[in-house]
Image (tube, rainbow, N blue to C red; front, side, top):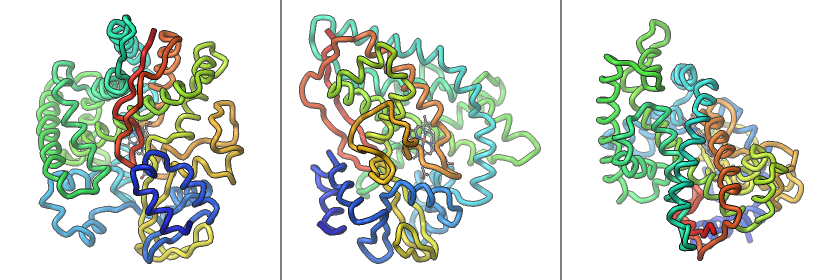
Length: 402
Ligand code: HEM
């Protein structure tokens, strides 16, 4: 198969369901390939890592979007997204990132651990009730989705009473990451408008009545004299935290559970403590990355033997880099004890995931609880995969627990 045939196959339902054999074929072609003029696909671990750390490779920002999609300003979602950290380059990215990082501290994340443990236990209690008679329960909705969305609401400071109505809207907005059909745009725009209105109201109430939450801290930072954060930048990045923070982590939990269902000894090791939870989470991230790819705009250089030109679309396939045989021994084997390097699943360089520690914490708390609570956990029918490529995960993962 040549590169074009492999990409065509990756776009089919079978390719989406299991891209790994196709990634293996890409690895045989080299670290990077150019299937068409102006497009470069990078699958090698070292090459991806180098690109993400190289400031010469920018992300698609306002200037680039203007070239590719001149009507973007008519869409509220793009107006917000063009302030998102993910879509900023240079000094503007550095300024907003450092201000947000000042509030998204290791202390704040670690402080969430008891609340996450309690939320996980509550969700498992509810699953235990529903599945006590041997009937199937649905892991994706009942746990994998509810835990991260509740955690991110807790972190930001969204009151409990608002959370239920909030979740479907956040989910609609998250579809912007898989944006492949213009027909989805109206729903995504509606979600963007609704979330922004919600955060505007919440910020106004926290301004007069600050609490111990991220939104209050961000408001304090934005009002401090040094390096201001505008109101729009603050509110827009709140919507980013929400959408970047839960669907990804939902997929980490779902993809990890599927591995436990297929390889029960991995789950038994976590339950017994012989497999440290952190190592299990790191290997889930490597083996079946919740985020399969990200992209950059190229400049005149050479990567993995392929010439790159100014303005090229460079796709870094994180999920393929994680299975690079040049980097990992037996890349297709799930082995939490491996010591051959960390996964690329959180990216690298200036845009390295700001929520990585939180996602690892959630996984590290959730998996041991699940396997200890439900030692008889088993699949109950075929899982249903989400028909998405960038975000990789399941829609439904039915299980029995007794
Ligand atoms: C398993 C879960 C997660 C995965 C796999 C993941 C993956 C990623 C990746 C690959 C990037 C870099 C994208 C790029 O370089 O273009 C990123 C950035 C980001 N992530 Fe995550 N993420 C996860 C969880 C979270 C959580 C829990 C939050 C927040 C609560 C979060 C917030 C962000 C933000 C704000 C950025 C943008 C950083 C920047 O551009 O400077 N993520 N994430």
